Every structure is written in C-alpha cells, then in structure tokens.
Image (cartoon, one colour):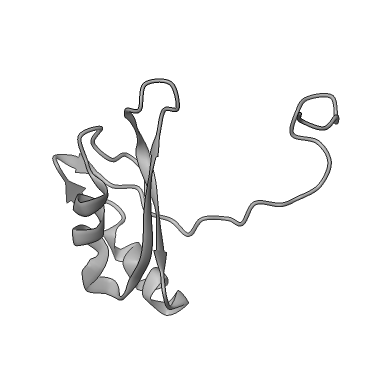
Length: 89
C-alpha cells in the first residue's frame, strides 16, 4: 500500500483494509534513522483471494491521500543487489 499519509498508523491501515478479510500482519515501513513513516506499508491477508479483493482500495482516499494498492512481488534471492554483483556484508 503506497501513498499513505506520513501520520497513518498500523491501526489506521488495518481498519481501512479489515473489511476485505482476516489480516495476518500490517507492516508500516519507517525510516531507520528517524523512525518516521516512509508512506507505505505491507498488508498480509490470511487468504490470497482476500488480498485480491483489497485491490479495490486502489485510488480510494485514506487521511486525505489517494492510496496506491497492488500485490507485492516476492523478493528474489540470488547474487547481486549490492552493486557490481558482490555480496552485501
């Protein structure tokens, strides 16, 4: 879920999406230095079909901002990602 207000809380996001099904987790992404919200979150539903239904929230307003909602892509593992193909330490 993107384009969240920086003041949005995990509870706000959970309440906005709970009508689509059982939520396992809401992870609000924050800046590791300041602790401030970065304006996006991951919402994990118990059932895939519920997550797909929650796509209806795309473009809807929460705290005065139009949400961007999509299905997250799974992270791929493998080499690279630390520049020049090396490992990150």
